[in-house]
Image: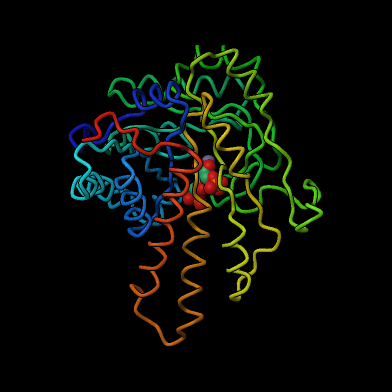
Length: 336
Ligand code: G3H
Ligand code: 13P
Ligand code: ZN
């Protein structure tokens, strides 16, 4: 059993309280490799932002669970080396699919876990979430649950269609499960294809697709039922069109990729939404930068020469999210 506090990690409890009161959201960035982790820590440390490092089941399979955990531990030390004397870094399991996966992460030193039982019937979702909460809270590990189903398809996360969270269920769910935060469905979805062209309208001036707005009425109703309770948004990449266009112009094929407009995430950040999950935008930044280098220098075969620029591009993107979208810069409890 590894105590996450001995690794220098923190859980989400205090940072969520401060985020709700302060009208901003904590970035939850997924990582699978060293360059992503370097970029996340550089961006959050330079900007004095708390940060949630997310590890999915797919990431654990890709990179090895033990290695990822030691990388997160190293990330805390790296943040200090970058001049951030009191970093606030959470190591979080993203979309935990079973009690066993959550327990394994808690035993490995994670400070926060998500149990995603949103595809199960209501009672089963409560029962499984409660089982995880009872185990996690013994070690002061915080638990995120999900109610409602997001559309979209990713390697380990799929749901054929979106079912918005039903506000009338959230009080009973949070009280009976004991969860610390709740991911809700208000129209965001995973991946780089969040809406079909048929669901969008077209801007007559630019010809670009304009996605339908998020269901802020559902968010408002949830906040009315659960005042001050931490709300999480998954599937919150914006799919920057500059990256999509660059990738497509350099031999890629991402037709009609589209995300959530950043103004809507900015608006959500000012509410009880205190954790915003971003993964796909990092994949796009990485891919655009790699294509840029390899296209202009076909003879390049030193991975540092294209992974380095990819890391720089991700850092730039993470900084933009922290400052302009989530507003979590300069929000560490101790800034010195
Ligand atoms: O929500 C899912 C995350 O983007 C993780 O995706 O399962 O492909 O690692 P992944
Ligand atoms: P995106 O695919 O929109 O980046 O969402 C990531 C996510 O929700 C991770 O849990
Ligand atoms: Zn997610």
